[in-house]
Length: 374
Image (tube, rainbow, N blue to C red; front, side, top):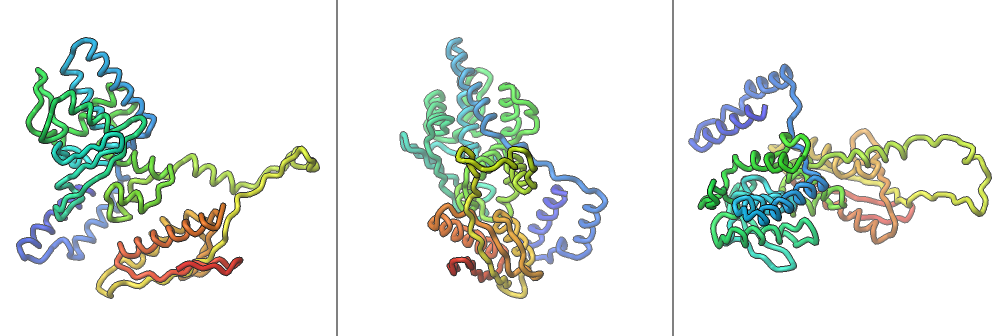
């Protein structure tokens, strides 16, 4: 299906560029595609995300390989392993695609020792207007992409041109950068050499998915993640985020009824502590969605995404059938934290509405304190 969509997109673009009607928008084409999906259902295959422990494993292996190569005076192996470590760490911590990795140029990178680095990429898949974009990357205490990049430049003695290049049989570094198609085989070879199980399931998107999962698990909100990686569409962002099975199990366990045991039936004494539930604020959400114009679509999708990506994380309960009033339970360790959480929630909801060409009016109120946010 992805191949068919790609071919249709190419046909659509060609017809539009030459001033012809777009045949891919005809109803018969949409019906045929729907029929194909029905007759040949297939789960979309995604790259396995690179977890942080696997990143540590591969980085440690590359470090040891560099040291062994230096001890053997094997300059070619030292070059390759140093390049591979820089590519792996920079690709992970920046969430770069393969095309962004190969388009990095030394003259467009500025390193601030001990602070981080700035990478300017003149063109990439996500930059449709070819405006170019700068990416910040911090220096870290371990698994540092900045020090790995500096080590690669020192070892290779490169001063300008593409950052990541092929290394010939006799140790000569190529003048041109790596081809985009070579990044996936290179990563799989690195993982297999480092002893990573099922290395064939990894690709360049594993770095991007791995970083997105790490950021999500460490409390980054969607706005921060989208700005850092460069996503403009929240739907694209959600494709990279997986449900944390550990946290999912905890949620189910919390909802199970407690079993009555002898220890529960014992009277409470001074030595017995009674656990207290984490404080939470119960708020009511009232929202109204309208399309920018009758010519655009996206109202139902905006409603669904607001529920799934914004409200569902706070034990959402619908209060009416039309989907305009909800009740949420938001953790409330303090009033300041509650304010920050609610305002972040409002930002996420407005962003979803705008991405789907809709106006949003929303009011959040806390009945117990008469507080409100808009």
